[in-house]
Image 1 (cartoon, rainbow, N blue to C red):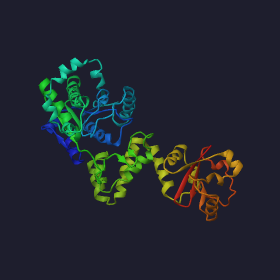
Image 2: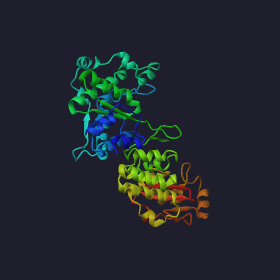
Image 3: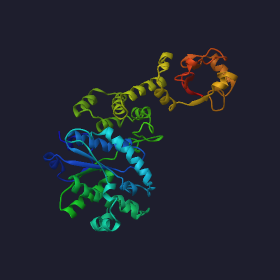
Image 4: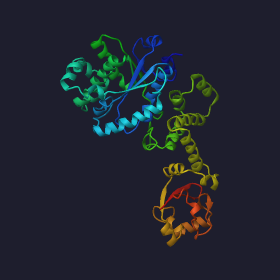
Length: 422
């Protein structure tokens, strides 16, 4: 199966220039996708395009990541409702350096004759003055050609600055320079980039008299119509500090049943034959979600973090876990738990004065009053690290403080808290 046939089966082809499939069948090529570092991390939305590069590399071709050190300073207006806020140079550089590291974890830049290449388009423009750019690039396209692009037409009524209007010239000129410097003949991207990408093929046709190609993938949306890659809290980041491995895992577990087959095709590195077997034999969407959640969590965050995610899930959703399970939790696992359930602060010095249970009473605490606490203890509801508290005078032992910092608390089966001991 060819690269294009594989992408088509996976639902990852929206549009392509004529003759691309024949060209790829006869040539080992370099192809690129551009990523503007306007965010502090790559997101799961970016990962759709990274999967296109991954499949390209698996097919024997050479993937090229174009970091938008220059275009990130401008902002792409494509299908945006309003003008972007410009990032500072410092923000762009910080984001770019972090995303470089992420790309090196996701693609093979180290070995093989088709190892990935990374280029920064800031290197194209940092020594170029405005007059040179206008003469070399600005003369290529007419304003009428640029105005005809759907992404531009949608912004005319609401307002479009010259800065963002010029973005398609920059992206088009990028393609020409990549063609000249590296022999790159294919640009890929999301379907919202079709206008910008074909601007690049036009640059190459007019200025170099050569043929270049474009390939786009559909923009993903959820079955309910909302934007893919977003949760109720916001973006799903590939950085564990911005989206914890647990939340990342839960994003896939909570996927709409109607979306899971589509997501498996796009994000799984399992072969088509293997996926076809899974779809034929597995009828429960919950199991399909677990398959994808496990594969992606391990790929993005590693085996150890995946094991921690399972332990966090076990603690939060299985009321049968015991004290031994709790005492075995690592600091990282306890930290992950602290991100998912209410946290309260308790003071050892105050415990010595007023007792442990009193530390759990307050307007924003486990109990509203001492009476509530007594009733919970009488009802056998209050537990410390899965061990029931038998009386109001319970004394917290040093062995109860997990890794000298945390105590897990429960008020009944459903109300879980974690206390940070100070």
